Image (cartoon, rainbow, N blue to C red; front, side, top):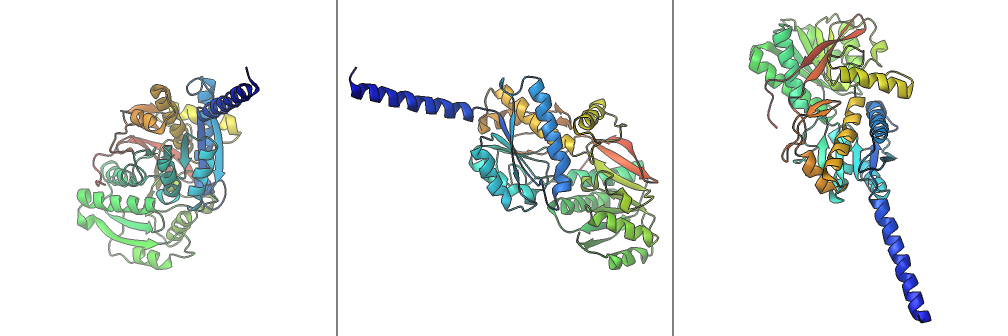
Length: 391
């Protein structure tokens, strides 16, 4: 063989080696976490991240994805939504084939749009249906129940199970989820309790130090509400409850998953007559044994109890992707999505999950309702919505 031929052969061999190495790297099951590891949104994302990492451990112990262990890559968006796009690029460059984004449409969408363009499946625990086909594209999936379904469920439960007839709606008009939640509660409540059953609606912002004007309007009502439906999150939500109780408003306070957990309960001493909808009781009394087992494993891994139920959502995102990729026999975004779209009551730790080509968020999956009396949390049971505002 001539010297030139030898050099050519060597170059070809080197090129093939590089291609083979690159292909091998690109074929690894890498899961990206573009989340709020710091900043004000961090408490909302923290247990979701922890749940995702627990799923990686469990799945890897069972053989991984396509016979390989899942690797994770991370990017901190610092609670700044616009950094989500940078984060998506960063973890995709590191090989991510699927990405979990923050649990709100406004926070998750910037990065999810990038993932969509790169044929990478995007997950979130956002409860806004826009995190899906309609708002982002066919590779975006929410593991949560739609906020519209959650609000309607709480209206049905309050009226049918508790027998309450008069409600007042107090909206923290800050994020997409709270707006959907309160809007759907009000609509469903008027359907079942009549327009006269809704005594009024008011708004505030999470950063408001005082809601004295809103509280005065509630105390000034000719009829006293049986319940106040509060759509908020910490720290504004607990502050609103504290101010209502201080003003003598003893009506039941009902709220959505954004006020899940007991990490904030110290700011409202002796809280009673409070109810929150979430994905499972972390207090060891969930009707679903799989949920109780999850929180036991969570505590064992992290050396502390979960702050909220959100870990179930992070776990289920990784679990769904792993199941779909293994069934598809591929890490390709389009091929994995084709399997995700066939999920019909697929058993995830979060509960039975159904996605179709047109809807990438759950609506009727049972949710837990947790009650609080004298500062103690306990499961009321699991319930499914009967009817909810369409979206």
